[in-house]
Image (cartoon, rainbow, N blue to C red; front, side, top):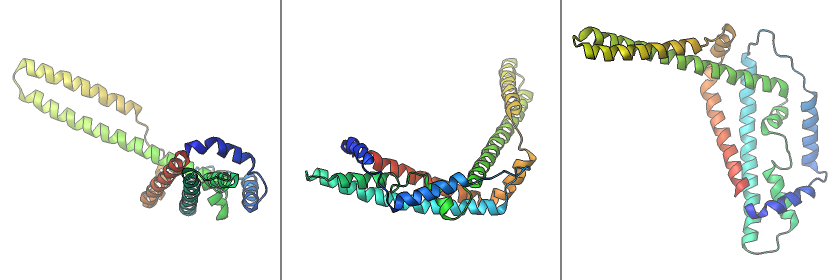
Length: 233
């Protein structure tokens, strides 16, 4: 599809006429603009917010699958006509471009999905950011704790070796390793930020949903990757 790039840009200029998709997009755009949300003062998620987030992500995944199938079929149609050296009409390129641009609807799929299900997009954005900020904080905390545990075990092992040897040279080398490990552990401890009480509460609420959230994220990222492949073929 690289050879169609210039024609697709030209097609975009001629694809701005009003149609049902554009009207739907305008309605959703206006609804998003009108959304208002004030995050809670305690910064805590609720079970309802997490479950609504999952509903929106499921809808987003369905929307992306539909967009991908439509994009693939449209781009394949235009590409096959080019290969057959037929006179491809400008409408073919318009249709292909609209498909590659989410069927003429230029809003991100997660925003469209939120509005299609009747949810507040500003609240969804806050919930999404809060979920992944909590997961990132948990990952950093867990990694630091695990690293400190490894260093502590290594220190105990080295100290035992140092106590067990009577050879001055060997003890000197072991003591050097002890100093290195001690400094490394000190650095990790200084960099370690423990989870705040708010993060701990949000994490406890998220625990049962984490596998589903991460699986959906992986599947959605894969769909985005496929869409990009179609776009660059």
